[in-house]
Amino acid sequence: MIVVKTGGSRGINLDYVLEDIARQTEPLVLVHGASDELNQISEQLGKPPRMVTSPSGYTSRVTDQETLDIFTMVYCGKRNTRIVEKLQQLGVNAVGLSGVDGRLLEGRRKPNIRIVEDGRTKILRDDYTGRIERANVSLLTTLLDQGYLPVISPPAISYEGEVINIDGDRAAAVIADALGAERLVILSNTPGFLEDADDEDTLIPRIARDEIDEAIATHARDRMKKKLLGAKEALEVGVGQVILGDGRIPEPVTAALRGAGTVIG
Image (cartoon, rainbow, N blue to C red; front, side, top):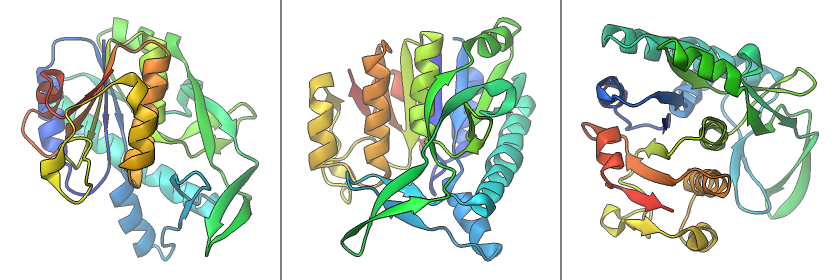
């Protein structure tokens, strides 16, 4: 069992990713993002994205009700449907789902979020952000047993029935745990984890489990912090290996499974 998470950042070649997924022979679940497209469409709709940073240094999107509506339109509507369409063209019987469908992804809405702006700690209220905690494994296994390839996008649903914005990398970790996946592949627009985020020649090919916290604290920037956090959480619950791979190259999944990128574990 393999879980693949492909990011939504600019530069990722989604055709390469999906063509390679269509060639895989092991059972597979695909989790996807759409962050760059969401930013573009939010700008076009007159609701530019607002990003904030937590006291611990993690960046997230402010998700009020209007932003959440745009989020679901882009992630669950346009991007998810287009991915399923492409996989169907490649002969893969894919099924598109959001985390809300069948309570596929459940989590807890954060009532208040602490952020740092202009050097001051503030409290952000009325935000629809949450933390993914569990996946509906029976729904996934039913689809997999019938030969379908699940294509999953955030958001998730809270225990109170509210739609919540969750981190896709951490969602992939929870799904990998629920399915007992051997490997989790996280594809982004870099060769892997870089010692210097501005220099692609500084790839770190391997990170041991006990080195993840240090890597987050010393070298990770922006979205890479969440990717490493997702990797750590996946390993802690029993996933055998996490690979941070390059989603810009041909056969990115195959390359990652052969050890290209950064192998964590």
